[in-house]
Image (cartoon, rainbow, N blue to C red; front, top):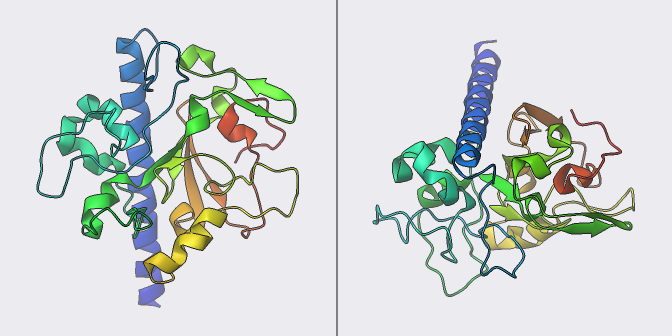
Length: 249
């Protein structure tokens, strides 16, 4: 009787820390926006380019360095853009979900060294590029969101979430298949990459907490969605910010 109770208590403790992390992340994001005329963090190569978010998982150039990467570095984690609101490199622990076991370590890039798991685990919350990028699906275009005031549905738009992928981009690496096919699979990219990591089932990095995924919404609340199989897709509008058809949890 004792072991199940201890396991449950451990899981509840991890979930509580995860929720606390996500609430702190939201606070850092809003502080950044307050200091930047309402803008959230994004990158633009020049005045004419589309806004985008960093697409990697590193805070520093390697495990021995304590120097924070520039947000525009090709290896930077998206949270580097908010780092000063968390005390710089020292604050990266906020972005470590205690339920995370393995995240993207870029083993599909043969030019990169295989650094220890610990180096990557402070990048265990993923963001979606459609948070800032223009999206067009089923004839509906949602313009880029570069300011908090740009979100017409902040209560139903995901800011970040439990994820092995540090920046999600579409239906093969997020909780939505971005498809009208009700049986379309999610996380197909990570089903394919599993072999590089010894057959690890990466879906559990999106559903870390008793088969539930923690979601931080732009409005600041945190909720969880339950795993219902790889053929169960959430509403892609939770990522694009358009009027949702599916009620969030």
